[in-house]
Every structure is written in C-alpha cells, then in structure tokens.
Length: 153
Image (tube, rainbow, N blue to C red; front, side, top):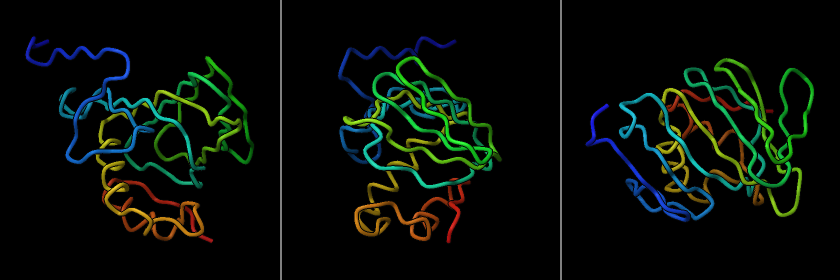
C-alpha cells in the first residue's frame, strides 16, 4: 500500500468532494482514495430510501445509533445499534428510518462510487423529491448513470 494513499480523519472530519454535501453525509473514503475498491460514508438517514437495486455494487450498512428498517425479500427487519446488513448487488431493497432521531450508519459500497451518486443527488436538489419524499421516477434520472434502478409505481 502506498503511503500517498494514507488518510487520517479526526472525529467530525470528512473528505472533500467535487461539491459540498450536507452534514448528513460525511465521506470518509472516496472511490479514488481506495483505487476504486470501495467508498465509505457516515450517514444519517434523514429520508426513507425507496425500493431499488444496485446492479454493480454491494452495499454494507452498519448501524451506529438509532434504528434502521431494512426491507428485502418481502420482509422488513429492524436493526439497532451494532446491527449490520450486507445488501448484495442485484437484490431489491429499501431503507427506512425506524427511530427519531433517525439512524446514523456507516455505509460501504464496493466497488466505490456511492459518494459520487450522493453529490449528483445534492446537485439535483428538490427535483428528486415530491412532497418532501424521494420520488423514484425522478431518482432514476440521476441513479441510472450509477448502476441503480428505483422501482416505480
């Protein structure tokens, strides 16, 4: 491993990105930091994530605080602090906040790229929501270039 890739972040620090992202998304390792292998974010799930499929990346979620609801295989599981789920690519799933305050999680995507999707969502702004909730049709306009498809009604 090259010492040029060594990254050390203190509590509250995050990696800078292409654009500033809200504090709910603290990027700890960007895709280019890991030679494409993964990206890692500390995230607060402020909005429910509709059912979707990652076509290329596996997603790992570790709950730091609160309760995360994970829907997959026609069932919903509640994960509290210390809970973990591996969501393999190709498996439809949804993520919902199961507590107030909302859950805070570590999200790892392999291969990387999740932080780029988050930046694109931030740039899209309210265009990807309807009535304050994510709109799957609008999300797909951004998600397609990241190998993600949201189920639409």
